[in-house]
Length: 156
Image 1 (tube, rainbow, N blue to C red):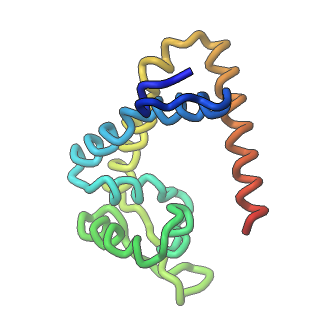
Image 2 (image 1 turned 30 degrees about the vertical axis):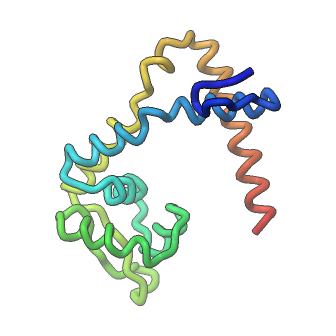
């Protein structure tokens, strides 16, 4: 078995071929994310940070960094840009006023909703799969993701 994804690659297992297929399925993701961000006047990084903010549960920049799996200093610039654009406000956390949380503004909620809708619209190839195949694929992927998350938490 070989693949066009990596010229000359010969799969050593079915799992490796599956992983390559999953990677290939994301081929349009970066373009979609860039276009969605540009449509609302944000960088892809700021747009993804906005998507990660729950309108009902404000979080701190530190918590946002943990969600994005990056260093807390990395979220300062995108958070500043979101605030400058009027999409978030920093407010003291009611339970601990020493900590500021990121609260979505009405404009931020609207733009976040637009981004989520655009980013998570399934690709045509996924929509064309019969419902039974979608369900089977979803179950297997969710099981794999849960297993990987479990292994990652054990390494910490």
